[in-house]
Image (tube, rainbow, N blue to C red; front, side, top):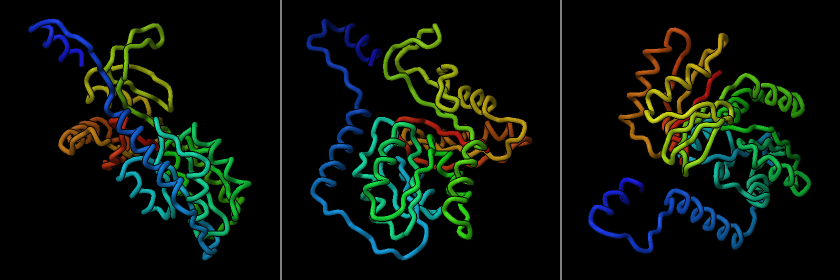
Length: 268
């Protein structure tokens, strides 16, 4: 918006200036619609048809499809800037036709809401403390249908330690990090939830962050690109990372469709 304001000032004074983040407005609107639907809809209690089931929280059509492909029964819409309520999660649990339901919050802010659903459910609920989308995907991949629920819970919780998560987003406003000024619109690189550096060039940011995440035992890297990234740009970054790191890891590109984050990087 700064560039627009500067250009407008060339032609005269500005009055009643108002700048709003439409991405956040859109998220709030979707949250209100979801709450309205939940308030009017009767909860569905599915009959028990199998031993185990899964509920996962995520945003983005591509990420949602990834979880469904891995056998997740119900997906709750939510994540960064939009946290589902305990009631949202409970409804998804009750709609899952399983005796034991594993819940993957995939965000540290959703873990408590998920755990509050445990005593309210009509079936056994086990919340795995996944804090990122890559952790949730790794847990789903490590599920063993031949093991009991306690063994699976232990194995899935352990799988979290083998995943590193990178995220690239933008600064919504001017701020400060580690004594350094951050300007609105700059790229923020997060290594397992912590801001490690800022950048202005997306390709450079992705190369630096991926290099930072790859360890000596890393084998697989998955890139989930968001709704604000074109397929062409995503492929260009994928090719650049392949050029840099294909001798160390196998890299996969997925259209995650997630808001807020330009890229989510999973390293295992």
